Length: 320
Image (cartoon, one colour):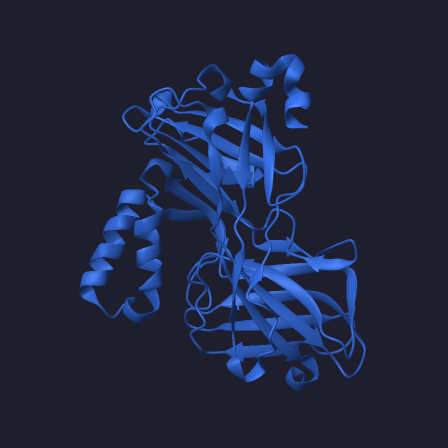
């Protein structure tokens, strides 16, 4: 089917398309006292119309780094992304690496020529939604990235079969109530870190192996192990990482006109950055009528990239 679709303009179409594959979330548990077995993985699919910002990186001269916007042609786990706009089209052959970021709509390239710095926005709100009647993470809340490096000197964008990794984790609140209620919003407040804002990064310095190692050791070593802190601070400095803009320690899940809950658990999803919930959190569930439910946790349930945590809650227990 693909050959038939592109047969008339094979060279033109091929030069404008790459394939992106999404990653399956790994399921873990927030509080083992409330565990309900939900399976070991969850699909993270791209949706038709999603955008990826793709970069052709030049490590030596950032002024020669090119970028372009690509749009998903279909919905699924592995989908073709077609070129839409941007100067990458003038330089399709790989320089040092291809780097892709999803969602492309939340990227600012104003500082790209300065050390390959890109700004990624994590908003302080997400919007509840359902797909075919089933609750799903908010649109464009699941940040993902992929880097494609190869020794092939003639590799082009159409050779890049990109394996996207989830940057964020997901908190799934399974809410139920013995008294029917209408949820208007849910506020996640982190007790330690800012979890929203404009994140500045040098994308040529992103090293997935090194970053994964630091995150895996974070809970046991943060603010406790001097050698680890030195290693972490060195990498943060190398990345040029800092957060500004409308930064803060809360993310609000807006539920629009309201979502009904009753005695059967209903899921609500909030995407969270790595290290969120490291020192506890406060979750406030606001209803259309009556007092909110407030869950105040001081436990370390730190999120890692690609982490899906379940928290089943009977909200009646948390309303004064």
